[in-house]
Length: 299
Ligand SMILES: C[S@@+](CC[C@H](N)C(=O)[O-])C[C@H]1O[C@@H](n2cnc3c(N)ncnc32)[C@H](O)[C@@H]1O
Image (cartoon, rainbow, N blue to C red; front, side):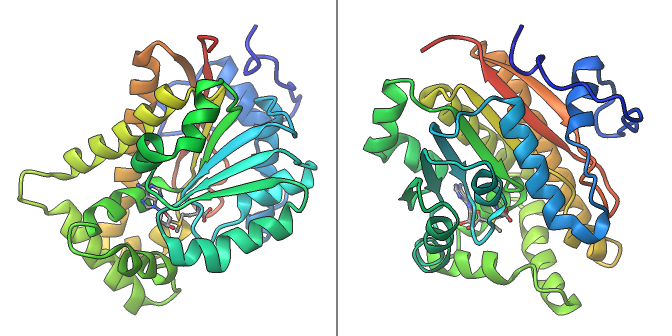
């Protein structure tokens, strides 16, 4: 039996039907059940951290093991969960935004996880796969326990679109301020998404999605983590401004479609078994899911 199947079974209420996953069996329901937020909408952040804790427990990630987190930006959900579990292992942090990494991410991670080894890799996921000798070293030895990302697919999609016209530091500025809670900022974010959605240059939204999905699948297949966890819960920001600015609704859909594509390609690789777990982190509406995967082949 895989570790995904050996999860704690709760006797609580059944999992609400998700429109996002047309059908989900007992295995998904069991995992969804243990990942249910319990703290209420006013404790949104704690619910996200709590879900990550449940994921690390479900996937049996050793607290002295090796975790790779992709695209944290200024977010700290993953290290907060690991800190609460006493993580003392090695945490690679991959994000091309060098300014944010050294000014914010790395100091915050070191403070939260004083006993862990934090290794910053200021590269895109694709470049980290092909250029980071340290990641390649850990990969070759089959030492990576878990590859994770918290709500990154929309950012990776728009990041790839913006990289055509922006320098990495301009793009990192976009990521730092595009969630400011006002209509003016939302309109700018929407404009960027309109650019991606309306691309007429042969690189359609499908093309951008395929390229981000390949970035993930190539990384996972080459580095060979024992497990993968990718959270794509609905963005409260996109929901809040989506009626006024429909491109933001489409942004959410593009992220969901990208995740579906990653799930499909990981499954088709034959290297991973995958499970999509409907999320109850949709406290503000919308639908979404977690992608959990386990490597089938021992390195
Ligand atoms: C807003 S943050 C992501 C949210 C964050 N994980 C959280 O928990 O709130 C977006 C980050 O994605 C990074 N990013 C965008 N494209 C990327 C790629 N191809 N590879 C790695 N990181 C990427 C950006 O540099 C930025 O720092």
